[in-house]
Image (cartoon, rainbow, N blue to C red; front, side, top):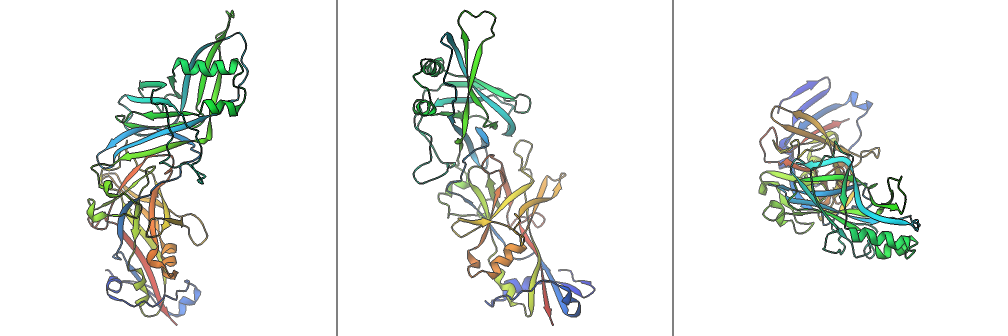
Length: 436
């Protein structure tokens, strides 16, 4: 490495000490301060510390209280078939209808929230089913997960093929089965159902599911609703009447899954199973919604204690880049990544925070449009300090996951540690040694 001099600071390469020193002696680091002025200080820089990346998959992730309904499917040559369907519970508050009212029709109004992922140009298809099981948390759980399912009638209330315009139109209109709508209308009009408990006993909810051959995931607001249209007998001047049955956002959620047969992820059968990047095209992977995440291991960090003298980490940044041409207009990536501290079993211990308790994110550092390269930088000083101070430092790993993992399906293909020099995963670390 290049040697630099600046006043009392000297910058050296220290790759050798990471690989060769084997002492288990603990670091007694001190913060950088004014007393450095009168000491002989050496500052080392390296970008050659061993870093290992693997891919793993969370057994399940919480998707309760969905602020966005995700419905759709798309096929990816790397990730297989990714799918999202929505279970929604109805929350009716109308229990009085005019005695002369006459039922007309019923429709599901799904309001676009402008989100989409993958290709919306081809024709999409949705099916709507009647849920036959009470939508509620399972057992002692207080949440819905991406793996949660409920029984439903396999005869669809609606099947619609359509062109999706999530940026141009405000909603998608799906006409439902006439018998289903009239049943709700008659039960309320005849006072057979007159409160929410009785309503939910009979009408437990809806499942909205995409055809697996669809090409896009579409986002809808949880302020979508069921609308019943009717008229009043003998009224000639009226354009008709309607009443809306909104969704209960608390008991509505997305079930997100993927068919990974024939992909690298087929082997990820348990959360503590890991796919090394060198066994998966020198890449690690992330996919929101399905639980696929990247784990970072820094196995020899403690050897930093073998440098004689009192030392401290001044700065540390993990650099990782998106695989060239894997981030596209339809399969886009976000400008930041979520970071978690996890153990060797993939269990999340906490989110990554800095010394002030603020959440740390991985953020885009550079975008090379000519070669379609996106590089993220993750500040790791506080994480490395934690590892060096922990008695279980070998059981602390960094998990990288997508932002909005509970309401999106973005996927990331990241270069691993054995990629070419300008793209590979690396840790840039600056370490100071000083003696009084």
